[in-house]
Image (cartoon, rainbow, N blue to C red; front, side):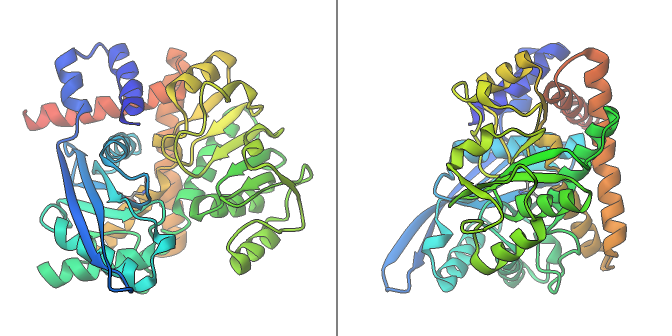
Length: 407
Ligand code: GLU
């Protein structure tokens, strides 16, 4: 996966005429920490997981990025996702470098007590490299506000009261209003800005969303509130299709009660992978990476792909989409809403002053729209894909900060 991120980085860096040595300097992570996370299970057995924290580039500020608890977490994934965070923060112009990490465990197989012990042990192993002005973790796949609360508590136990060491905390424990919906709402704003340029609006377009977790479900809600027709959704258990548009509030209720979209009666069941090929205007991957490949890219019917997930498009698929004239709003821009509101949460923790939800939504809109304007303008002027334009903007900003600091 790191080779995919490197591919996109190099594509842009070469266009900018950046030399090989500087490319290498910007491409590789600054620091990779790998730890053994040993915990006692409820059965009394010992389990040992591997934990990672990769800090990619800190030229623009403290390292920032999520923690993923998933069996696929390894050094290569963490490196790729950390690099994406560097470019993402630069594109929407928030003062952070990029980091990522996680543990190769499956939280669905752990009891709440085991999950808490895994989290606390991980923090005790990495606490020296994180901190409110060093590296600030946040939620990602399979991690949530409760886990962030344990991280804050464990870090504070070792280092003293430090709410700003982690973001995505519960609103009742130094978290921010609007953080949970932030990625989905940010994706909504990005779609809105794209459509406006074409003289269109969210209303009456048809959307298919792959993944109905935190990001996909909030996105569906916001699109529906603006008159969009969500015609298909999927999760790990099932996919649903209704060409007339799913009843999103009812679907969210069903999801709340059952924890899956499976069994919802307002749509027809589809084979899960077929979601990618349904007739729609906008297709949103909002689950794991590596969804679009050389094998399936020609079967996608949407004219716009919006990457709510990190790394959903392999380079071969990206080339096919470009050749076919399918637009892609890339992950590093489309899903930046999460880290933007993380930034607001961090600022509130440092200020010790709570902002209002409406204020947060308005500021989120301004940061995403600012990133969209810069990237879309450049792409149109140079006639290049949005992804390349986004990387050019990011590399330019990180490069400038590096030069100004002195190497
Ligand atoms: N995990 C999210 C992302 O990939 C959010 C990171 C953060 O808030 O620091 O952008």
